[in-house]
Amino acid sequence: MSASESVPVSPERVGVWLIGARGSVATTVVAGCAALTAGLHPPTGMVIETAAFAGSGLPPLSSLVFGGHDTLDCALPKRAEALAAGGVLPPGLPTAVAAELAAADREIRPGGPLPGDTRTEGELITAFTEDITDFVRRHGLARAVVVNLASTEPHATGRSLPPSSLYAAAALRAGCPYVNFTPSTGLHHPALATAAASSGLPYAGRDGKTGQTLLRSVLGPMFTQRALAVRAWSGTNLLGGGDGAALADPAAAAAKNAGKERVLADTLGTTPEGEVHIDDVPALGDWKTAWDHIAFDGFLGTRMILQTTWQGCDSALAAPLVLDLARLVARAQEAGLSGPLGELGFYFKDPVGDGPSSLAEQYAALTGFAGRLAGGREGEAAGGRGGQGTGGRKTAVRRRSAPAAGRSGPAGPSGRRGEPR
Image 1 (cartoon, rainbow, N blue to C red):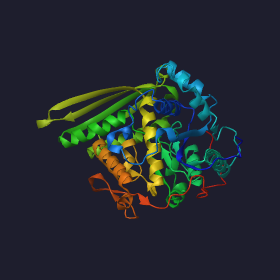
Image 2: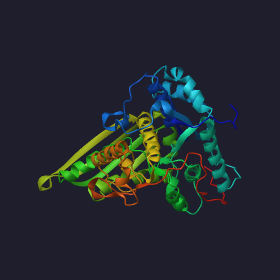
Image 3: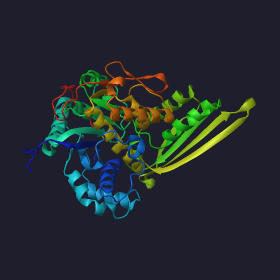
Image 4: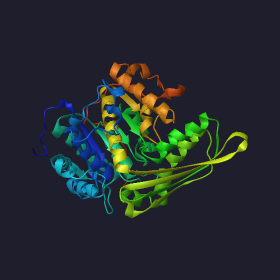
């Protein structure tokens, strides 16, 4: 099929456009989806494959079509072989799903801006938008969700849009819901506030909660509920791969740590002493180790210590969450929801919208959201009034007519030069 050809729109096909499409997480997402669809592995780690989400009308894994942007030039089959060699993917899986990896790789377009790129921000947004809308048209997709999986960038300062915000603006313009699985700026840039609010699109983020912060969102409420006073909470992360290299930049590490610290402040009601340190250890590859040292006071001021160690593979922890989120947000658009999906805070360190910080309360909000999708009661939580979330806080989710994927949306910023990565 030529680039100009398209197929009839199918209500069964949903696009997942990945930013950072040749990275470890994205490769694991594509390979994992293919493996589950073929029945080669069970859906371990996929929350929405559990009984609580049955009947929610979520698109099946077999309906997902992958594409994306990346600045790297390493084909997905080759990337998958490297991940299998490192123990991230099961032995033999890259060969078993080689056709699906190759098909997704053919849909990856050059990202940017790269050093020396002379295009303005507006020109870059237009180019990215055209890539997405072309993908939607050629595959006859009912809709597509854009998910940011690119390396962490420092928090934006000034008026220039960082790469994550250029891609977010393109998603809005293409009429696609947006998920920010990174701590990067994305839709949080002030220049995109009006476009996001007027787009009629749902969006979620930011910064996927996969390891150390997941544990903190469980332990923090435990100390509060047991009336134990936390005096200090310090942590260290050792990680390699692309994340380790990216987070070696102190500004990028600060962006990452902001979400970790916010979870403690929200669940404890105060900010304890201590910091999180991130160390790049290239030899670890896609594996990471996280230590936490928690000093707390018990009855009569007795001083005690809790220490935890988390060792895991970030790609294997993140990939099932990405598949969950893509399907949940696609269903939210189909159901006519728009605005920040605060009820998906279960998946994020720094969630958009309003909602609880405790993992248990976040899970209750998530299952309630699934119930509304199943029962067609979205308007009870929306309708411009704001839904009532767990713990009495409101979620800023609205019900509006869902724009068709690929339709031209808000124009977004233009005319300024993009910052090189």
